[in-house]
Image (cartoon, rainbow, N blue to C red; front, side, top):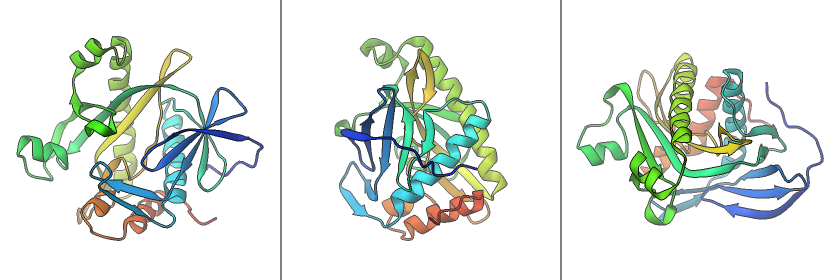
Length: 246
């Protein structure tokens, strides 16, 4: 089981501040610190709120998932929990690409293709998106990636393989706890020439439904004004065996 590591790691300058996390350099040139904030946003920043405890919950949730993936042989950038809201990670050369796997129809694929929500997809569907907030993270394909030099062909193939491996591991993990992994977004980077998983895996970047009732337990609760956002994230975590109390 993961735990907060009490070590000295000097957080230095802020390198990047995203929608819900900030990245800081450290006194180790090969390590960064991720700060999980309470900020929550949707619709390209048009809806923004602060939700108490969210940063802590996502930080510990992400640590749990990353360790499960490491145990399954999937290399990640995760190193250690440093505090309730901070995690130590490897410094990666991130590729500006989001890899999305969909097991059940929801979200943008319903709008784009005119299909109803909740259809099982067999096999799961894979999609690429460009990581660009200003453009609304547009959907792209492998020709775009190659033409604009966003990633090498062998790295693209590796990202696809790893994304489906993650999907297999986590679908089973959530199903064992009575939940359906509807879809999820992953980001990858290069570390010593290898493609490894970066960023995070939390209910902010995936959809999770209760298996029996199909109650939404993810960020759609915020997008759709359903309430109990952090409480639902904590429910997911408790079902998995994550302890959020300090």
